[in-house]
Amino acid sequence: MLYNICMVSDFFYPNMGGVESHLYLLSQCLILRGHKVIIITHAYGNRTGVRYLTNGLKVYYVPTLVIHNEATLPTIYGFFPLFRNILIRESINIVHGHGAFSSLCHEGILHSKTMGLKACFTDHSLFGFADASSILTNKLLKFTLSDIDHVICVSHTSKENTVLRAALSPRNVSVIPNAVVASQFQPDPSAADPNWITIVVISRQVYRKGMDLLVAVIPRICSMYHNVRFIIGGDGPKRIDLEQMREKHLLHDRVELLGPVKHHQVRNILIQGNIFLNTSLTEAFCIAIVEAACAGLLVVSTKVGGVPEVLPSHMINYAMPEEDDLMIAVSKAIQMIKIGEVDPSRFNDELKDMYSWSNVAERTEKVNHALHDIYFYAHLISGLNISICIYIYISRQVYDSISQSQPSPLIERLRRYYGCGLYAGKIFCMVMALDYLFWRFLEFVFPKDSIERAQPFPYKRYRDYVDKVEEPKAQLK
Image (cartoon, rainbow, N blue to C red; front, top):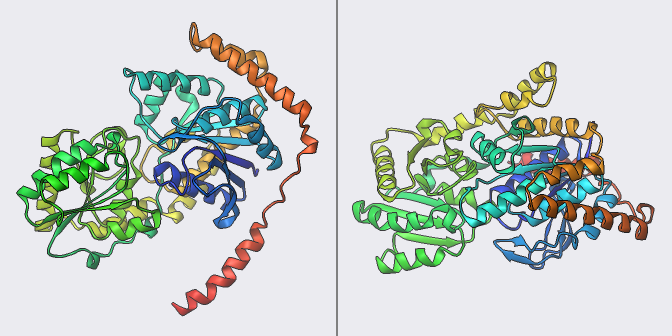
């Protein structure tokens, strides 16, 4: 069965990050499997309106106010008329939200359930339980997920965190790790400078990514090893701290700050290095370390969140998120590179097997006969032998499961929201009731029949054209 799926998130290209690449790759593979997929995100500068990406992926860049780190200002009902118009125009039957920080995601799930559609949510982050920010975000997440059809987490640690934060039944949460196309990160040993041991850091330069740790560690490493240099890509509020550190310790010739990095540039930066350093303080999965290992780098990472679930032990050195322990782990990695204890250039072949298309196709064929219900998938994918295709296959089964159930009656939705807290529950019920009344008003003022349906994208003709163009190029190579 094929579906019309709407991905909703504040975070998408041209912004860079794990959520953005996850959205794009997931959407592309769902399209290849025959589904129709659109993406709704907020406008990025001049990038507004409707854009078409590869394989006919349609992206709606809606005009909303961005307040912090590409997250939009919550409007609750202000987004509803445009969102409803898009869903009806594109004949959407499943809404898939991404990111607990995304206001569009939360609002999209609320409105889609009001409209009687099916909703799925993917959590890409870990949160605490003590600080004010986490308490408020967790309460908002509990509100959103009270009426969700299915939840996907990117690691087992993330699943435990989400289940506790949103008071969910573990049966309604699947663990589906992120994926990476290993062939896009082929190593090139000749690209690295043989006179230096190069440590690469590509990350958002924010507190959560451990930039304070990085600022403290770099001068110590440079003073201890005179043939070590750093290449740092990314941007954020903590960049000023890195610039001040470089100025204070006179490390201009050994610390290169690249600034914002586009995704197609990541591989060319990674292959210049020998070691990839991740100093995150919290991480649900960290797809960056998989990309780095695929590019032939030995990884050093803080042992936080879901990171220990990602790579085999011989590809990574772990450290506690402390300055001294990180120094020990980096020093160990430098010695391993010096004596040739490991050959990171072989990592790509190993990861290619883990993320193999043929392997996934074989496993998919086997599980087609074995699977009887959706909750078996969480056990099926507990290992690391996963790729984009298996993610798509399992997502398809999730969509199959949630699309067959009937919409929840209004009284049942009210009951679910009422259970969110003594005071919060009553507020949530009022928010949902007003959303329902607003939807009925929109249905009266702008009937479905008055909204023009979008013409389907000619996927087959597009692929035939691409094959026709690419074939001469392949022959020339």
